[in-house]
Image 1 (cartoon, rainbow, N blue to C red):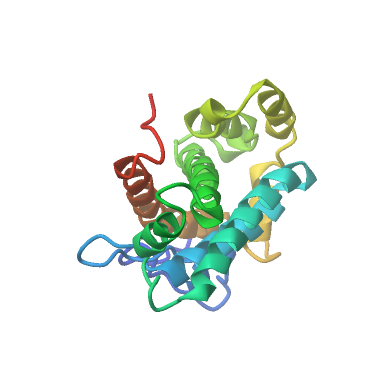
Image 2: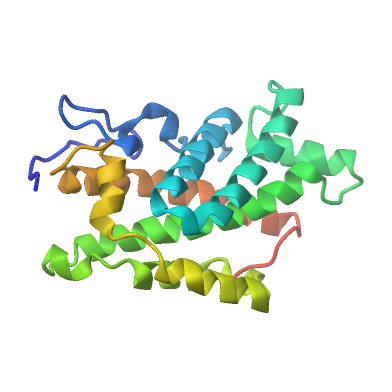
Length: 230
């Protein structure tokens, strides 16, 4: 297993090194830095969301519905953005424009973004759990099974928004997640022995990912479009 350290400056500033190319080192997959006044750049946010959607395919066929849900909501927001990229340069402006167009109520984009942020919360928690389990000091062979990580991530994010049928369906997803080394090989673009590098690259993403999601969650709450977690 690789032990080389990859220098990570600010979150999202990692770069591929020769022989250490990974999915999460691609610039288009970085969640953006916020502006000084706390706004989220829409174009880079959507690019990063596309990266998360594509990453879900690494989790196997049982995650197909999860990927379709995330992708469908990315597409809804992107369609709105493409109508006026300059006027909706920041995600908060896109939300305001969509609300104004629909009399203060959800439009297609704002409802899509509501569910997108919930899906992102799930993926953020899952990646965080994956990194934490890898770095917890136990032999890596004992933490390969990610079913508990998926269950914990689900409980912290999507579960409260789902009805009985969706919750039962997600139990199947929880039990069918691939082992971590299989996922990390996909993150390493098929290369072997880069688990340490992959985990480090994922970890470098988490701060900006978390800040983007928190900012979006807080904005929806401030607009009375969603309620805080209990």
